[in-house]
Each structure stands twice: as C-alpha cells, then as structure tokens.
Amino acid sequence: MHNENLGFEVPFLPDAEYVRFLADNTSQLAAVYFSLQNPDLLDARVGVPPHPLSDIIHHLQRLPDTPKYALLNSRFQPPAHLLEPKQVDRDLFQLQVLVQAGCLDGIVFVDHYLLQALSKRDPKLCAQLEAVPGVNCMLDSLPRIYQHLERISQTAFKPPGKLILDRSLNRDLSRLREIHTECAQLWPDMRLGLLANEGCLPACPYKLTHDANISLGRFDPDQERTFDLNNTLGCARAFSHDPSLILRSPFIRPEDIDAYTPYVQTIKLGGRTRGGRIMRKVLCMYMQRSYPGNLLELMDTQEFLADKLYVANQALPPDFGSRTIDCGLRCYKCSYCASLASTHVQHLGIHIKPMWA
Image 1 (cartoon, rainbow, N blue to C red):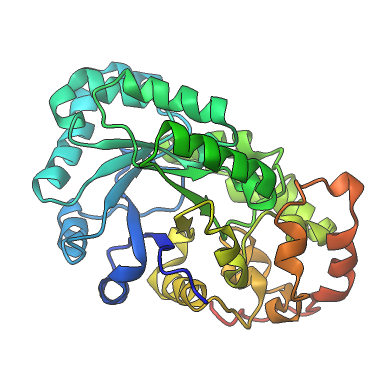
Image 2 (image 1 turned 180 degrees about the vertical axis):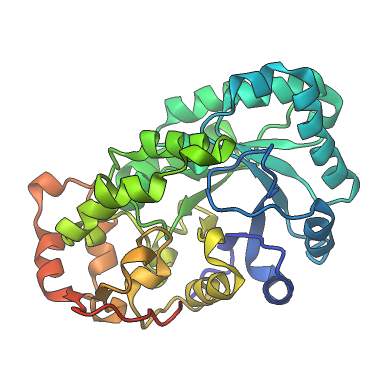
C-alpha cells in the first residue's frame, strides 16, 4: 500500500516532454529544484550548459502549484564574487526576475557567506524567499540542524519549510526517528525528507573535497578535473575495486521508500545532469515502488558503472531494505552487503551500452 502523503522532490529541466510529464503528475510532487544554468550563479554540478532564463521561466510556469527552488548550492563562491556589490546585484536580479514571474519560492544553498551577502544587499527581495540548506550541509543531528536554522534566522530570508536530511540517515533509522521527534517538537510545520538515489560511498571520505573541486571547476572551467580524480583516485576507483561498496552505499530502493514514511514526508531524487528522459524513468520507478533493472542505472553517481557491472535489483533479498534500514553503516561489524556482492554484482566482462543510455 503506497503512502499517499509521501511526495517527491525532483529536478526540473527546461525540456518540454519532461515538463509535460511533471505537469501530469503534480499530485506526486512535493517540489522541484533547478539550476539557473548560469556561470555566475554556481550550483553543485559540473557540465551544466548555459540556458536562457526566459526559457526556464516559460517551462516553470507550466507547474503553477508546485513549489520551486533555485539551486545556489555550490560548496563555495569566489570571495571576490561575494564581496563585490555589483556582482551580488547581478545575482539578485535573476532571482528578482523569477519572483516577478511567480516561479520561485526559495533557494537551496550550502554557502552561508552567500546567504549573508544576498540578504545584506537586498533584504526586501530575500524576505520573499525561503533559504533551504542543501543536502550537502549534511544535516545528521539536531545540533547541526539548529545551528543552520539559527544562522538563517539572522538573515532576511524566510526560514525553510523543508529539510533534506543527510544520506547517512537512510541507513540509521534510530537517529532518524530521534531527529523526527525532536524536529516535530521544535518546528511542528517542518517537512523532512531524504535523498534516495545518490549512490555515494558510505560516509564518503571524499565528499567535502569533491564538493570543493566541483566549485573550483564551476568558476574556473580550466580547473575542472573531478571525473579524472574520481576515476583514478576517488570513489569510482573504490567502487571498482570493492563492489560491496555499491550495496553499502546509503541509497533507498523504490521498493523500500514507504518504510520511511512515519518519519519523512519527502523523497528527493537526483540526476538532473542525466537529462529529462532518464529522470522520467527514475521518477516512474519510484512512484511505482518497483524497479526490475540494473540498480546502477537508477542511481545518480553510480550510473557510470552500469556498462561494467550489473546489479539485478529485484534479485536482491526481499528483506534487503529491512536489514539495512537501521544498520548505522557499521560495516566494520557486518559482512551482509559484502556477502551479497559476491553473488549479486555481476561483472559484464565486455562493455555494453546501458539500457537507459
């Protein structure tokens, strides 16, 4: 039985067919988030081509009742950018255009310096927008949540009406339950969510440096080497050397999302750089609570392995979700995922084009 109160937060892309699909499924959507696709307003993804703001607005207006959040979630912005009033004004101008078009409810941010700079420069505009900490703020405890919300309260921005909690809580139900209870007491109207399909390493040791390298590559494209770093030195290399990490990654399968509904109201799905066609398939699988293919093609980050490895999602044990939902990522005490990897991660041998490519 699907929980009808569970909504999906998904990437918005200025793609007519994809937007038509979202418009047909607005009852399932909690929110959409989108890149401004502008080299001056940095988000947390490389390889985002510039796109006219007018075109983004045209497509956003087809989702009139869905909350909309602009991604300004780069780990950091160039200091000169934040300290130069004219540059901050250019950023604010784009937000103002979106507000006037009725296409912006808030911003997703990670860099509190950016939040302060925007608020200081135009408090009247910022007072119309929620400031939502991005998932890369790693909100994994009440003290961390409280400190972020306290900093936001010292700006002109509205407090957020939603929070996407840290990925680690996907595998730590005990902590999730505690955070849910405490948040309900402190902020009764706050909606909590989890990111379901980002297949990062468990408690990823590369995370902060990876985010910083993305930021570096965004404002200086000549420095963009994140793919090479990950494949030769980082997470991609780790997954290839130890396939058990694929199953130890704190994702949530479509089959398991309803187990989280006592504690969260939103499931966030990633994959905006993969395009509208694939995001439509990903959202369909999560709405259906079932996926019969290669688990790697469902993930946002592990999909690069889908031409080398095959993980038959429906062949995983029926109790996979219940066995891992409260494991706390204590892999040093447990061999469950490692034992599954030996039988459920298939090396394809030859490189074939993935089904969704």
